[in-house]
Image (cartoon, rainbow, N blue to C red):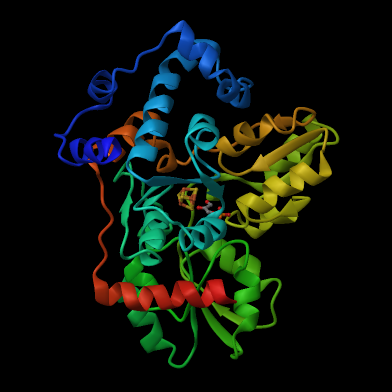
Length: 353
Ligand code: 13P
Ligand code: SF4
């Protein structure tokens, strides 16, 4: 009964900002809070100075309390910052893992700490649930590179050729596709299709990397990830010279020339696993910066060498807007039901494979 009343006050509450919510919940930094959150702090102490913990800890406590009260679950992509990744999320992973897990979530609310297309994928698999994203600025240069109309045009120009779309696309684009893929299963999905030619959208570099490994002819689009396209093979060669013995692992959204200079390439979770298993003395993770921070705690003997590039979209999400998103139930993901049916088919085909 007490819980139900609490829920009603939450649901009828007025819009409040992060600091106002903390005040309303009577949560503030104290010595007792430091003692109580010691275990959480240990997980991030290598990358977050103690002084910053006094700002993060009240938000972490408020989010975790509200999450329980509202029957919410938090999904976080591997690129989220360590305080989000380790201290408030329930499910972590790459795009494929998050999509799969989203389908099994048993909660009323899903809050997605990732970019907009990831939240849309969660909604597609949970049309009856409330899916929230803390920042509407969390877009993706790949998703923005193509529209549903573009896909229709490509299909008209290339009739009877199956369309594979990377999950980094809008629901509208997925709805025009035969099947989706992620960086961890792109080759497998392409090879599974009964056709000698495949339209692969929208990531040009991922398409080129798949084309190198398959016998099928790949028809590409011109989308690029603004984070991974910045890495160059020259940069990697220079790093190898300056950091003898360094292992280089790269995400397949990088150019084929960058991958050719790398020791391993795979999805964000495959990269994490590679480090866990191989325990290199020094590693250069050619991807978004938070990845190294997130796994440095569990791999204390590995030295993570920079550079990395920040994804400006992923970085629009922080503890303050996560709390605001939960409390204010904002920003809710809404998808046109007709588009959702078709888009869901393309996502489910991938999951079933
Ligand atoms: P993963 O599926 O490998 O996590 O990649 C998602 C992404 O957006 C990488 O930039
Ligand atoms: Fe999109 Fe690139 Fe950011 Fe991944 S890193 S979300 S592909 S812009």
